[in-house]
Image 1 (cartoon, rainbow, N blue to C red):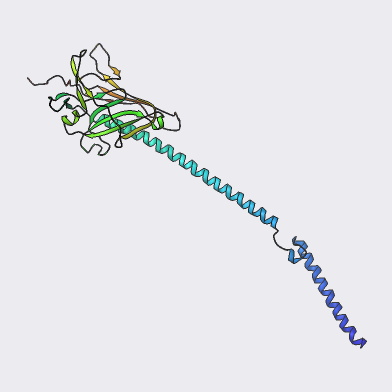
Image 2: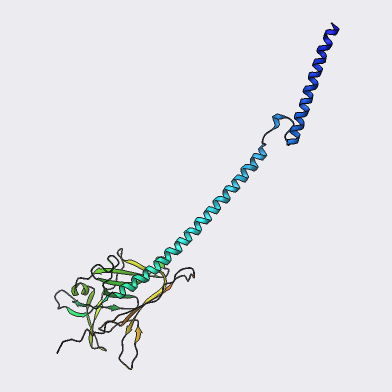
Amino acid sequence: MTRGRKPAEGRLQAKGRLQAKGRLQAKGRLQAKGLPHNSSEAGLTLFEVLIAVTLLSMLSVGMLAAIRMGFDALHKTDDRLMENRRVAGAQRILEQQLGGFMPVKALCAADPDSTPVPFSFFEGQPQSMRLASTYSLQEAWRGQPRILELQVIPGDQGRGVRLIVNEIPYTGPLSAGQSCLGMVADPELAVSLPQFRPIASGPQSFVLADKLAWCRFLYLEPANPPKDERWVANWVLPRWPAGIRVEMAPLEDNRARLRPLTITAAIPINRDPNVVYADY
């Protein structure tokens, strides 16, 4: 009996020594890899998860901030380009409208029963101007002539001023004379001058220039030698001016944006409308 148990006990002891040796070797490998001794403790702790989530959140916020800054810079650049295009477009339109100036005669009647009086159709004041032009915003140079009513009005929320224009189809002397209230005699010039209706702004008015500090119209008065030509703010002569100037200044002087420039257009008309020309 005793002899039979000894071999079995020896085998059990040998098996225990092998298991202990295997556990020691596994423990050594875990320690070499920096892992916990107990396999049940291998994994991420709550503190490590919080750190990972915090770092990921900070990275996401940084990426969103960079994208937002990029979009803001893009919008500012686009707004600057659009503003420059509007300024350049307004100057081009004004140059073409003044370049298409038409020396037309109009018929003014104070009431339907009175006889219409012909006069040179043009109104020139510091803040308003009326003229006939072959250029229009809707049809450019291809359509029928238009009566242009340019006026300087207060800007949005009372900040600065803006320049608007009304376009009325020109169909003849009677259509041009509808804006005339009557003829008034001028004792200094010994002629009769037209009195025009005030220019009204409405939904059909087109804004040529906005955000201006000021805007004014000047008119070149021709003179006979030895007198020199001069620019006047009010046109009272019964003829057309030799030139028209539109002066503008921006409300905010930003060097990064295009500034509105002074526009000067020559009116190459030397005919006196009060003189009857005839061949002899």
